[in-house]
Image (cartoon, rainbow, N blue to C red; front, side, top):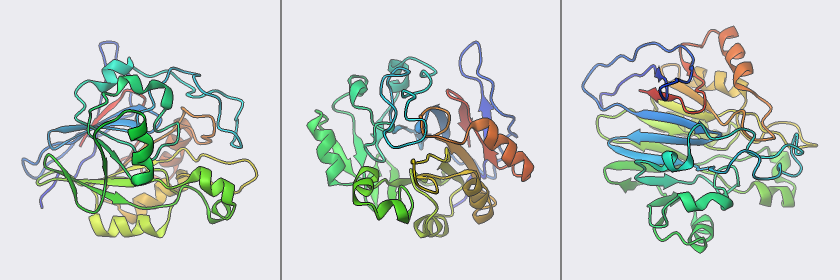
Length: 294
């Protein structure tokens, strides 16, 4: 399958514009369909793929609506740390389906579901999450598998672990961290997009990279930390470099930063790290509201 090998075009959002990082013009070897991603806030993103628009992990609350996560870094800070870059109603415009990688509050917030239509197709990782969301009144909840197709787009669930082995050895913490999926988007004549999800780097990530050979890799790279434990519960700046080494021809998009209390890696710090390692042409760090095209 011939695909666009994309280096994303950063576009400004709105008449006033939102400044984004410099990005080279995309190049194409065919008339393959383009893919668009809009970074909303935290892990929330709109992905337009093969003519369909997916809203991933909607966190739609206003700034400071919820307490910080207990037992995590800077838990005294209220979440989200920043406002949405546009009204929640505008976030929902044009959305064909919603993907919830897991039901932690910063990926699916219980107080703001009035913005998500109850009948929208909504994809989740397992029956446990489906049960939670159906109980909230949603009527079209579907579980992603190995070959889930939505109107021409193939969605494949990928695995990982939302924290270190030490963390999962604590039964109470393991229950809190739970499971979280990634998603691979595929369609004929479209770039393959691998949204890795809330996981540390594990063999499942290596296996997914080898199996799908993605053109675009979206990493949750905010390096979220728990008090009393070494290591992060999601990816870090070193994992961004590792992803580039594992898939040097892919475009890497770093997300899940600057919005939740326990994130310890900022966009500014990651940008400096990326430049120090000479991979700025392959790594994109979008601002809230910024649109990337592949």
